[in-house]
Length: 486
Image (cartoon, rainbow, N blue to C red; front, side, top):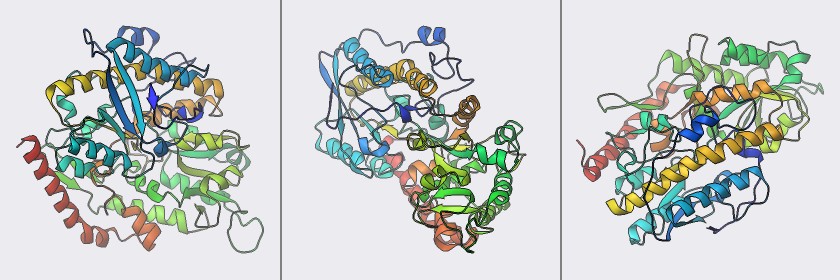
């Protein structure tokens, strides 16, 4: 196995992150089983791939080590006693030995269009340089579809999307006229948006336990704001709220895209494809307007919120780590930076719109898998190895990730692990997130609340919806033309 850029390994973010988006149930008592599986199930269920020998062919995966950071290993040159490193090494070696292939990983570096650009350049050149890409969730996806660069995962030989190592929500929500140009399996490291909770502050102010609120279905954005307001205080008495004061909530101004995820957590989607194949964009409703107004109030009124890198120079993670913030909206990618902080924190899902909302919902914003639209023979090769890598990740890497969490205690209490399971169950895909290429609909909460300090959704959507729909009509027409569907 080779890698253009070797990834330094750290168990930390391996975390719970690999298992996000898979079918999950109760966490195991020990870290021996994958989430939602038992040892017997893992042993009994196989990928069913038999009789393939690829005569030493190279299977190259293009990705960027920079996109998720050094804590997310896709390759390992050798065993070193680290449970995650060794499971990744075992996965890759098992597939290599079983199918007589050599798996290579090529890292482009970068966090933008580097991977899809390299992928497209290879396809255009016809050099078959890459059999699989692990790419950003939306960068260049419409462009790749429009030129017919992506294979339909529904038609790739030996890929069985009904197996538990493939994320079912991708197929349910992201098909375009029956075509699925992107997918996510356990080969991908997924992560989730969560609310980090300063549990010492909960106790100090004798506030309701957020775990109980979640279990009782009462964890709402209104409840979060109420609790945040209860703790906010100008500690130095200078009349200004800065990083040395106490806040009820913080979010990252430097990665404001997290603001977009309030739409999904409040039970809405930015875009959906109806049963008749027609696309429905987000429209102005009472629910949307209330969501924006509540969020605006949370951020700007009563000095409840520290807007990371905007309120003052510290980031949201830095200010939360100091112990003067009750709630932080961040992703589970931040667990590595919080491992050694003194704050006794837990995690809970993003809140609901109200108690009547049935489920807690978080955006699935992991990386995605791309396969080149090539010959049937080549797709058989790609599908076989992609399926095997996904299966081996599910049976080897995901259990190792889960084991490392328990052993290393990256979360501070057992209930946080249970919370994580419910968060994984709540992950949803949004059509506009993956196919909108960061469009104005995706930017709605950021541009209105952060950029314009406004909640006028009606004017915003009136300004941009027509052009967004026109872009999607072009995309759908391209799918009809390139993939031959009606």
